[in-house]
Image (cartoon, rainbow, N blue to C red; front, side, top):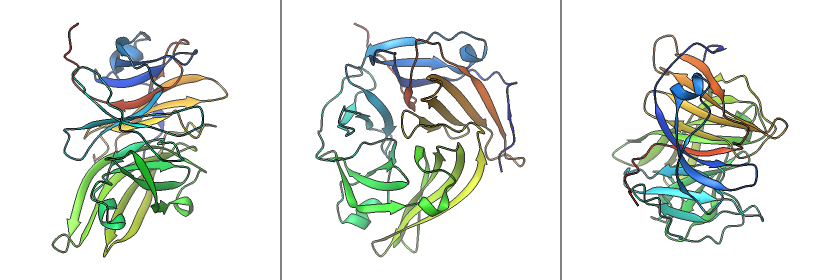
Length: 278
């Protein structure tokens, strides 16, 4: 189980995100953990998003970066995002829900019988597949973790790795999840003979509950877990890091700092290389 949150760390790590301002304008940006720790709350704007992007995630191949927006009617549209130019290509969506956190999925194509259902989204205490050819969430592949979590809603998901057993008959993925009580879980989401299963274990807590069901984001870089936190009652965006997760002492959880007052939610934590020069 994760250790208590402390404030003594100085990692120098670049991350990318979609950052909202108080008027709702969104920009793709680069943020640096060391800057934030040292009280430098500015960030590098890479390009205006022109859409309310709330989450971004690479697919399983690491070749396609997907982004999802949030509309006024609380539904989402799915886009492939070119990380070099930050150009969005609209796929669309017939979904009646919002994609409040995304991660790639190995299991869902076998569950739904749809080979294009290769992304997973969170919605309340549920996980369900997204057809990346149409941008539509499939309620038929919905899986509940309501009985496994401390909170009411999941507010972040990050992919760890895929797995398979029995010559591919059982396939799935390991994820980190965070809920609105800031509890963190190690979750296995898998299928066997087309039936979905989950195995969810609490592994720690950021000790910073929120009264929000979205506008939070989780990102795992292979060693560290990052959480961009946003709470309605304070309207403050913050960044946390769980470092050295796989060490014998379970690593340490750090509060890296608050963003400037001009920053509202920091969505879609991810890492990419932006190379476009105008």
